Figure 1 (cartoon, rainbow, N blue to C red):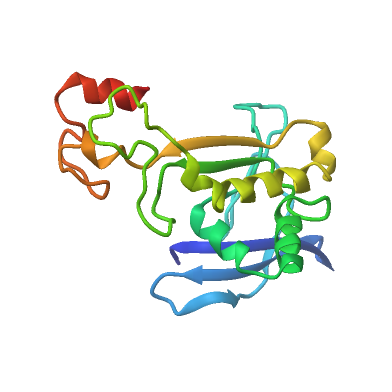
Figure 2: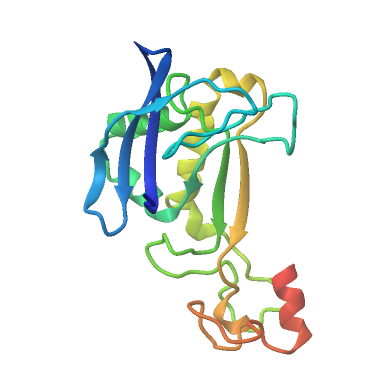
Length: 210
């Protein structure tokens, strides 16, 4: 039976039945009506590498001797929408939320993403370079982000420093753009795109790279 799982929260707990461990499954699945629906526990049996799976079962082999890429950390996204929403909450609730993600008893997020200029999860579209054909970026400014996004990031950094993972590494953040300013693009808008996305004049390419 094949299900398309959008969200699955699996918690492994030990139940002493026939040497099996059981995973408690909570499922949200498209076109099923399941929304964080509790499903039947799934038995997990220890198996050898050469074990033949029984009908309706799967074998997952974990070889701790085989290493691949290094995991730099786990986390989520800092967005203007999240920042504005959090600002509207009571200060105690704000601290509770930050502690849940970054605190010593929370998820201990250590690697997060944020957006350069606006993204899908913003109050409205905005840009750091709002003056048309400002190729030297003389009017470049991140002033907009000081309203909510940067305060959220700074608060998260403070909370993160109270976590034991802070002794291993700083809170890592990488930023990525969703769209160049509208005046650099062929369609003249931040939403959507032409093909190619940027105007043909290489001055626009250089300004965007800068």
